[in-house]
Length: 324
Ligand code: DGY
Image 1 (cartoon, rainbow, N blue to C red):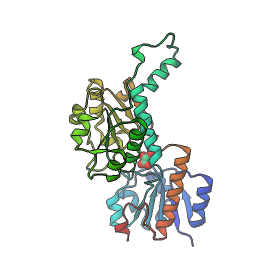
Image 2: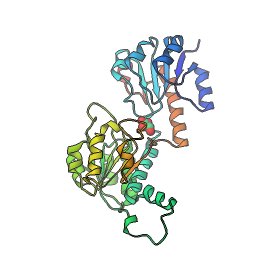
Image 3: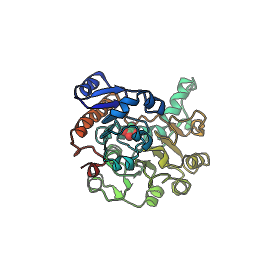
Image 4: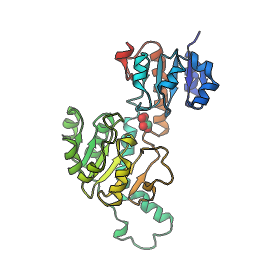
């Protein structure tokens, strides 16, 4: 008999078919308690769980006594109770490599659009305001050869450093727990403490996962250290930044502008002060959201679940030591 799994995210037909050759699949719309109750037997029997963007906590895990592996269609796994998974030796699989280049592209899009005011001026053109040769009130600031500060030098940080240094001639400063030999050799990146990155960078890009250590890592004191001309970019996780402090820094002119793909609350509430600030570019968490990359992430997550339920956790597993 095929193992049973719960799928809580729609998949392209070919990937669903692949999943169904290996497993008996129960598809659900979400992981809310009502949904779990409605499909109680399927949850009780499921050995695998596949999807994204939902909370997987101990209350849910209690309803899934047979669970052996979870597979998220994302690199980030802050919505999982990893301790609870570890306690039961349940594998947590994720998609750390397939989205790197796409997310780095998104960050450069935020850098360019905040500095050159792409969204702001394009809206003015659409509103019919381009009626004569433009003046300084339409100008932005340069990106090329400015200093790029990267907070977090993982795969995405490295891909960002490549774009910024090789494409735009930007010197790179970075803060990470460890020195990154490849970033230093290939892009002459300079390893600094956080304070130095904040004080010396023209663009401060945060590319960190959300953990207890990184929650509100960037707050009032950190914005106060940045240049008044600095542009702040967050494409990691919203709660890494104290959003109220960011809003204050933008309103008081402590920093010049912000480009944001992630927020403390997502979707961003319509009454967020961020939406009425002209110096903010706000995106709806599109970091990896291209057709190609989202397909590749889903394919990777399907393969990850097949592997994990076959006892293979060498690749893309967050907690292999516990599972083994
Ligand atoms: C991830 O995979 O964690 C990203 O945030 C999705 O864009």
